Picture (cartoon, rainbow, N blue to C red):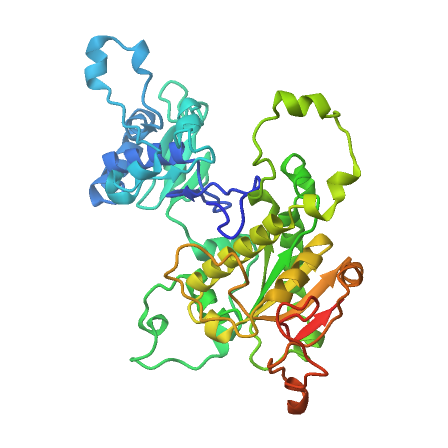
Length: 458
């Protein structure tokens, strides 16, 4: 699993499909071990009354009988067995490949994804056998115990762990089949929502909760949260090429921390008191335009270039206006911002009509944002998600607020002999209707500094 709104930088999460869990922590058991537990579960059928009879008989017989119901977790090594024994001992291992797990045992096999696409999922876990010499005792349909060699039943040493397990004692490592949310909340001190006790009972025709059906907690939380109303796109400045080698400099990590701080502030009563009535959450996403841009379109250096090239040399030509690839940088920023916005709207239907979009520009990113918003149409055409390629010339969204951080915008306005000016015909909340189209107050598109936004903060 990886982020979809930006290129992952060592933040790819391995998805684990778990079937068996440690009872004391409710954390998942490694897929390779879980599949051995599941294979033994399917073979012995501890959910049946027949298995209960076998356990009672084993306890009555004693240690020798308990040895019969103790199941070896991993099958014996086939290489050490004779040809005759190989026909008797079968390898019941289940593949931990995620595609195989979707079909093995009716989809009840555990699986673990792989970060490296060239590495077969589950290959590493199958090479190393956890609990290699352990035995397992299945108590009932949902509980089992992993026993190391010194705890497993033994007629020679007179060990009788099965009798103790059936009396309610914990021997070895207790594991459970299936995830128990109530146990998780109890173990990790996570209380259930207090509102549930205060809510009136639902009628028979009410929601699924009242009818006794299971409801996914994550789905319920998403439903209660509603759709985010404000999208903030953050544009970085110069220097992100260095972040490809040094992860701590990466812009995405800073935005992730910033997003957490924003969400934390939104829970403050002081902040809630000044929010507009229809405000329902803020999403902050990075616009990593530099990673998609290459300035090396000229190809490798020729012999003629080498004659005049000075290694690590620098001249005024490198900073002349004609040598700066401003156009490519602007197009890269617009394309990436539109790609992220399109993806957000595709995953959040209705946002293009009801949501608000804001831009934060840092350093060079703020100057580029002013350049783009100066050429931005006063009225943006309706978003067409059927088009595959994003618009490279202007933002496909209307920008409500522009925030400039560490910005050289003042210098660029001076350099271009421009000034900040409202856009003619743009209806801003609280603006005087007379000033909206006044030529002495407003300006037209393509004039540098006449940006298509409601508010600007520097």
